[in-house]
Image (tube, rainbow, N blue to C red; front, side, top):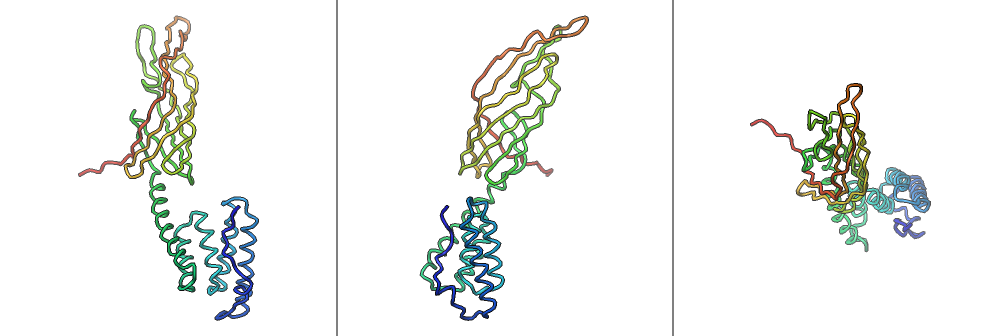
Length: 267
C-alpha cells in the first residue's frame, strides 16, 4: 500500500531544539513505531495502531512536528476528519513557513468538506417511507446502508382469495431488506423478501440485485430491483381447506422511491 508517512530524514529526527532530550527520545521512539505500523498495515482499517503510536508521540513530545503530520495523515485516511484537521493545524503552528505548508492548508480545506459530507450521510439514518407507503428503518455502518421493514404483505405482493369469500388480507408479517454499498451517490447491493403463507398457500421468498442512488439534499433514495407479484387461491373444504394454486401474475423491475419520514408536530 502507499505509505502515508512524511519523509523524515535523519537530521530532522536528531533535531531536539526546544525539546528536553529524554522526551525527544521517547517521542521519536513512538514516531518510529507508528511508521512501522504503517509499513505493516495491509489495509486502511489496520492503520488504527499507527494512529495510536503517533498520538503517543505527540503527547510525550508535542514539539515533534513530524508526529503531528503523520497523525493527521492517518486520521484522514481513517475518516476522523476533525481530528486530522486539528493535527495538521498543530503541524502548521510548529512550521508556519514550511515548504509544504500551503499543501497542508489545502488539505485542511478538503477535510472540512469531507466532514460536512460525512455528516450528511450519517443523517440518513432513521425512518424512511417508500412510494407504496411501507416504512423502513435505515442504518448506516461506514459506507454500508441497510434498509429493513417488518410488515404485512399488501396487494403489490399477492392477491389472496378464498372460495365464497373473495379477496382476503394476508396477516402474516414478513421481513423485507435492502443491503447496499454507497459509493458517492450511487447505491448497489441486494434486495430480499421473506416467504410467507397466504392462507393455505405458500409464497416463496424473493431476492434480486438492487441499484439506485441517494439524493442527500432532497432526503430521497431511489432503488430498482426485480419484484414478483402473485395470486394465491384457497379452497374451502369440509374436512380441511387447501391451496388451489399459486401463480405469478407479474414480474418486472420496480422503482422504489424512499422519502425520509418526518414526524409531524401539532401546531
